[in-house]
Amino acid sequence: MCKIKNVNVGIKKLDFSTHRGKLVAFLTDGREVIVPLSFFPDIKNLPLSKRKEWMILDEQFFTFAHLSRVYSVEDLMKIA
Image (cartoon, rainbow, N blue to C red):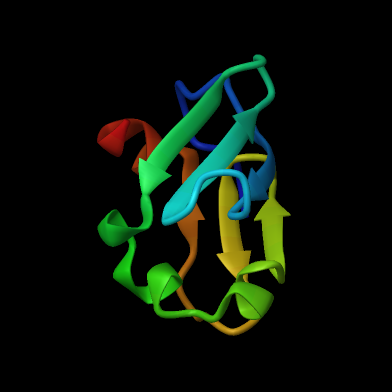
């Protein structure tokens, strides 16, 4: 994969345990983006144990071992 043009921020890590029912993305510029899992139904349907199996790709994309979909930092920023 390659980086998205005009996007200068990346994803460092994801967290699903701090805020119930929410996805927290820690960005490379120090910001934290918190979004309801209801905006990502396929992630919401994963059991918590499977949500822990996330992967960050090129700092700007993330996916899960048990999902075929790839999300981007742009997906998070559109919602936040």
